[in-house]
Length: 243
Image 1 (cartoon, rainbow, N blue to C red):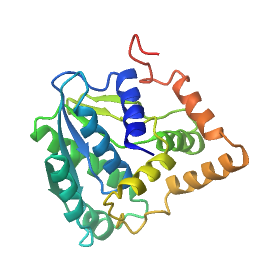
Image 2 (cartoon, one colour; image 1 turned 135 degrees about the vertical axis):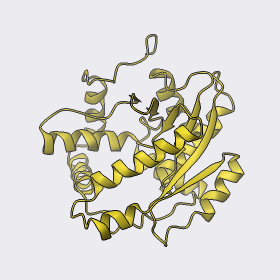
Image 3 (cartoon, helix red, strand yellow; image 1 turned 90 degrees about the vertical axis):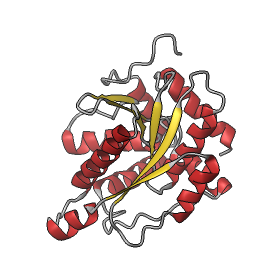
Image 4 (cartoon, rainbow, N blue to C red; image 1 turned 45 degrees about the vertical axis):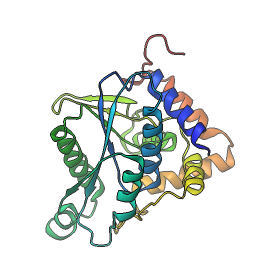
């Protein structure tokens, strides 16, 4: 995928759901994966021409794994002139050594988001950008159907009243396959997830299930996404005046 295509999809999401307003200071959550680095590119280039002026900074929550190297990501942020702030934590130690969690994903996500949001507030940000793409949204819907018995997907824009922060998801219209194409075209300096349970979670199972469903029923993934957009899920109402 070309940068112009990524920008077009990002702008569509930002415009339709009113994600960015004049004067916003947005923290980009950088995990080291392809999605967050693609979002970094997208928002930085959008910043250059978007009619509502906004500021950007990047935040990485370091979980404490010695093998996680931020040097190339730091160099990319410097190249794009987006300041990078690293939050050092012992989340990995707490989860795997202290608590010895058998199902660590939920607690890890909660702790990571808490550290990210807290740092965003310290930096004076009023919004945090998460790099969830179209596939993530459909997978979340399937997870909710299979394991919770409800039709749900996280909203494009979510206000966290306890933190007084707004979460936005500018990559919501971008498919994972397109982001992989963008990663290859721009040689994004990704860092492999060092988590020992990466790839063996419920989400990994649902990702494989969705891949199989789409193989047997071409286009089913897009139809599921359309069902989410049109499904009257709280928080999915488009901004008045958008198409």
